Image 1 (cartoon, one colour):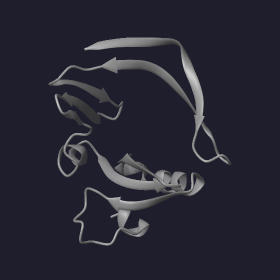
Image 2 (cartoon, helix red, strand yellow; image 1 turned 180 degrees about the vertical axis):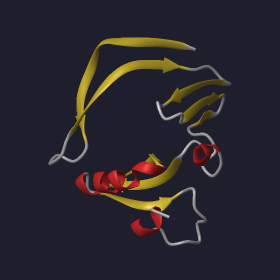
Image 3 (spheres, rainbow, N blue to C red; image 1 turned 120 degrees about the vertical axis):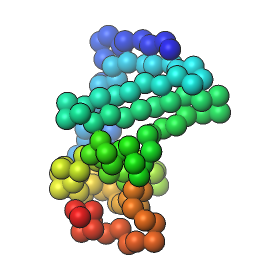
Image 4 (cartoon, rainbow, N blue to C red; image 1 turned 180 degrees about the horizontal axis):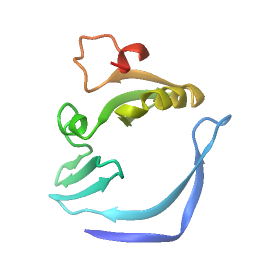
Length: 125
């Protein structure tokens, strides 16, 4: 693994032009095949990224480890771009407000049975 701390952080705006968010790019990490980094949250949640020779495991198991760490996994659309979000279960209401402000739409909650409908009310269950 190689990493580079970006000092000072590169700051840039993302999101809906009516409600931009400023991000700070603070580090670059280069993983070799079969290397993993784990990001941790104050609430005990974890998020792994694992490099393989063919690409990446971009998340831990969506319907097991992420759920155990208190995350829901959601595929969303913004304009013509698609994103995967990991949402803390106890912050679903805040997340749904964020989607409205940023003009994003839920395509699918990936940790649910795909035969179910995925409207915002089911998310809170």
